[in-house]
Length: 370
Ligand code: NAD
Image 1 (cartoon, protein in one colour):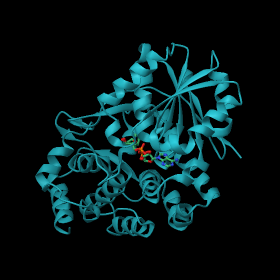
Image 2 (cartoon, rainbow, N blue to C red):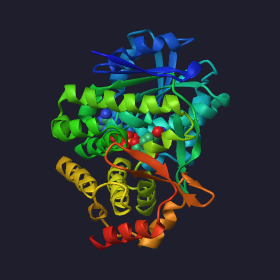
Image 3 (cartoon, rainbow, N blue to C red):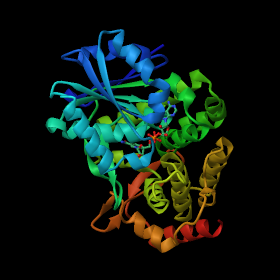
Image 4 (cartoon, rainbow, N blue to C red):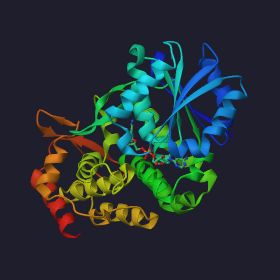
């Protein structure tokens, strides 16, 4: 069964299609968008090895020719060198203004290829075919595209909405357990930020979902995409509410920078740790109960994902350095960090009114328990 959600953005509205077997029928799904039967696909080497043939067959079945570029896998790809290589490859392939570029992979590929599509010939359309859990529930929806700078995460980019998102949940079966759980960090984030009922559903169903139950996986992807689509429709360019999606991200981005964007810490793992820290700060500020951070940590522990700074291998910088790294966040305005805090699970809000000493003491306690 394929379900369709709609991201309502006026003339930039698009469908998110969620179901099993969508790769094999990608040609039929995308054909209505094409002005000629040809697509340029950019992917990474892991996804290419496992799923590119199926995708190619899916296009061929609808008489669509596919050319493809395979990039190295991993966060380091999301930077200028592979970005310029991608743009130049698309130009060499003579991708025209009316053509459609396909981002086929996890969040790294989606972000990089979306940004390439945004700037190629001043903007061509693109389709997201997300293959990681993280990309299916988060990065493929909403139009944030970009690459990392030496100064920090995602600092170079553009808003560029896809024309269609095809989330084939069957491909999640080939993810490593670690990558699946990293994506789960973003799933549980939706519960923590705005939907206690979803958080409770995950407490009950999380383990079975991670173990491979397809019905539960489809439900988790659908509920996550619906939450994101609703927020993006109301606040596309993050003037307000969309910032809630960054729950845990100020901490996460600092930790990713501190670990050199390496596989010491995957993005979704950083989100889980960051959310636990955000609830700890909220609790110490008296905004939410002390039970909330404990409950969150208990669920993340039960899922087997990273929860604490102690779960990150190797050295971490001291508290002041981490705070300085947080200051590079895009959510800094006029030198002040805007935090996402919570009045309880499912009740996040944006505020700059956070005592820096409390953040400092939470971080130094977390570092000293390593
Ligand atoms: P990723 O793209 O590096 O994918 C994780 C790993 O899984 C990679 O090794 C990849 O090759 C592999 N993989 C992907 N699909 C697979 C499959 N079906 N089978 C086997 N292996 C597969 O990372 P990610 O976790 O998908 O995304 C993280 C990125 O997303 C970060 O750069 C983050 O900043 C970005 N992000 C963007 C947004 C947004 O709104 N644009 C939101 C959240 C995260």
